[in-house]
Image (cartoon, rainbow, N blue to C red; front, side, top):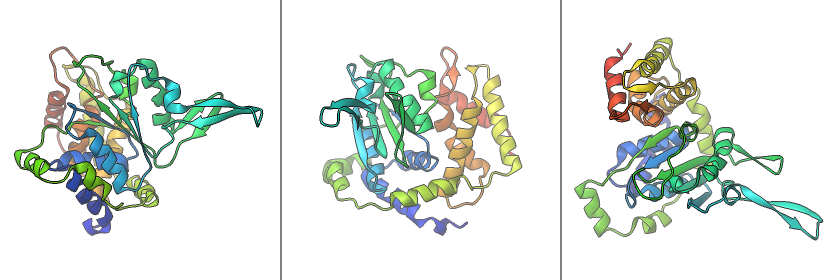
Length: 306
């Protein structure tokens, strides 16, 4: 497979870059996450473009988008939906909530109570929801983008490990470079530009690319490298526990998607290294005074490349 075999992916990345300026690596990671059929957690300060990124991803792929503003009084029914009695039909009728969308933005997810946060667990893992004893399938594709304020801010509830593990990746955008911020001040508002942005790919094409990701080859030595990285997380002195088998699968799928984005038919160690911190950082339980990103960098440096 040559890099020109997926030009629409490069076009999608270029379109995203016109909206989110100077953030090529976070954009590549976000697109990789979507291709790998994962969910994305963006942790950063307010006002750096988290919501705009979610909107841009939906727009570029022509996907139906719903935004949920998480607050302390948000209830699970506000996410999943509710059954209301229809007097004419003499029965209850289910009214789907905003989770029945192809792209769901869970804005400031850690401002809602743990009970409300957990309403997304089944949806993110099984791509279905159960309400009133009935299981209902969610759209395909189904992509959750959650934003999270730093934990030290007032009025936040930390996400439990089981919830964090449902996110394939966690990333941050950070402040823009000086040149990008100058463009933001001079050019039209990004939301105005976003409204004029035509879809680059269709939902059907995205589904085909997501299926193609799973066909990207992972040779036995590459699997050995993955296993060595996973084992290193379980033995590192600064970690209470390492990556789970599910996290190992997430790492493999993310590396396959990164390889496809680069137009390759097989995963190389550099693909694994490119996604390792974004996939593992929020899953690593670090000891006091340790930093997950620093530990991830140490593990990458200590494990030999096959």
